Length: 300
Image (cartoon, rainbow, N blue to C red; front, side, top):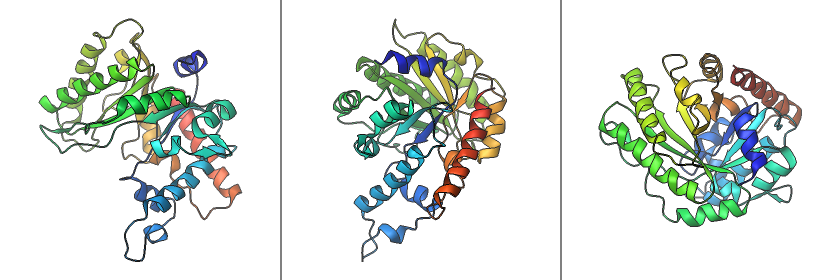
């Protein structure tokens, strides 16, 4: 494990950029960026995945190479596997992030969500995870991210946390730091109750970790300000980061500012307002404004 990256993640300022939209969420990300589906569809209307991923890599490359995307305000960046396997300006993406920008690279490793059961969606099985982790480590990736979704308190929530930590230990054994992400749906009718149960379940799992087993947590911004303070201060937690979860940038940043010690790990709220049709000057200015707003909220 890279000790400089570890120290930056643990003590550095800024936030983590989530650039990890996968196959299912890529069309929506491209649409918001001003690229319509017919621009990467064949004659029969079927999506050409190669063309789609080429376009989204162009978008991500434009973000990452922008002078606004700097290591002083961006602590880390979460990549999709396809992005990790590509290059930016002739260098592997993870290598470019760290050695050119001083931004710590992470990798999304989950394969999407299973069907809802007991008010929650577990992760689908992750075949070949050990091989993926070995490949990521060889490319200089520091850590991973994996997402589950909680709609209601109850048995499903406990199953989500148990699965997240089980896979997290497999990631730790490979020498990487897992970002554990049990997202609570912002539209849950029992969101506050789910957040109470979630905190308790996470604290129980943290208590089972051994020496040298540190994790990060990516959580929905809570209904009660500073609800996760015990997790922020826990010796086994390197960092608590927040997902935007469907909130727009202004709302997400306002909520984030009220939670001391929590930093952003935004996706849609970061790229909001960016467009393929913008000139480089317009694009860089819009990205700079977004980064400045999110970094300020992360400094609370």
